[in-house]
Length: 275
Image (cartoon, rainbow, N blue to C red; front, side):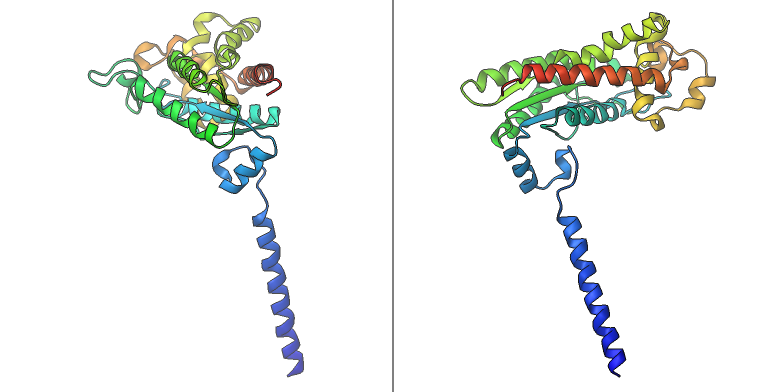
């Protein structure tokens, strides 16, 4: 009888110790730069500890040909923003903005001619960015950095940044849109590909070699690679503009990823020095 009681007591002690250890693990702040994975108190503490830069990643939901998934820009900007924030050391990453201007819908224009693309008006998009930035300024972030992965809304973002900085005059908050991010993902990466022997008619401007290689480097599951390799050359009617993605590879894409991350980190450090 005493032996059974001892065993019961020992089991209870082990159970309490196990629960305590589990609670301790769950109580620790997760090692993440993604704001949405933190609690409000963890965000508060991160800001107080010096993480006063917030990256607002802007993607888009658009067609990129029959062999590339619609969320290309969202997947790309998520990985790139994470690496940039980790490299900065004083930044968090806001939730990705996936609803962006992609053309009209009455009648359908631009990418809206292809099923799955989602569009919103430019003024709605700009108000969304402005509201998000003001939210972060309220909570103590000093450097609000917009990283837009898609070319179609770059001017919208620049207008928002100018308006925010005008309205924030005399406050600690400032908005930034480093041109190195999109500039490297487009012209900069194209130059790298040319150095490796590729020509513009293969590199393309949308869903071509450059676009597809970048996605293969960060989210290969989003490219229908077997069909891409064996299929015919695609064109504008398929949603591929001025390029040929059939020789796209993750290794090529990684060259672009590394350049985008390095150049954007340098630009943000330069723009926010002393802040």
